[in-house]
Image 1 (cartoon, rainbow, N blue to C red):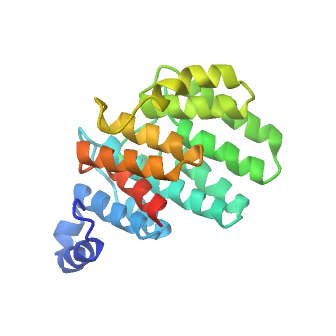
Image 2 (spheres, rainbow, N blue to C red):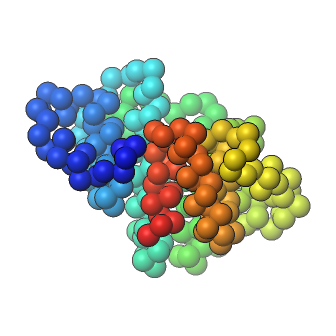
Length: 227
């Protein structure tokens, strides 16, 4: 993964014994490879066709499920298939019991909600889109860096530019080479991407991977920019 050798990873999975492939951690990593290969349905099926045991990093299982559905939805939007995108983003909001992580009292699903709003808008359902963005803005409050990004983007969509700027300006100030963690660099890169500054975004995603070589979200984002 760190070397970007997807073909070598495919061979390792193909040669691995069934007992190894059935391990929770291995399934998650295999789902990541399938997501990178844009085989989103296979990635989701791999996760849903298995009962994951609750474990300390179990949130990573649902995170991979969400990732696959989000990527599928964004691909559908790119292909001008808003109805398909709406379905994918709604699935990203689900908490399948077999994944071993239940829905918390205060979820942070603002990313899926923001994109659901985008898809609903593309499907000419403005009222539902407004509701999704409103919920995204509410859930993003007091959350981690990525939550604040989607809170700010949702506020933009809701026609509240001043409030959006208050939330997003700290991310605008993040620059590669300065003191910033991988999560901050990644979120700042996404903001640059939303603002149609692909070159700047690529630099921030690269810096995020330098800070954390296993940060799969930054890897997928960088792949997306470079395509």
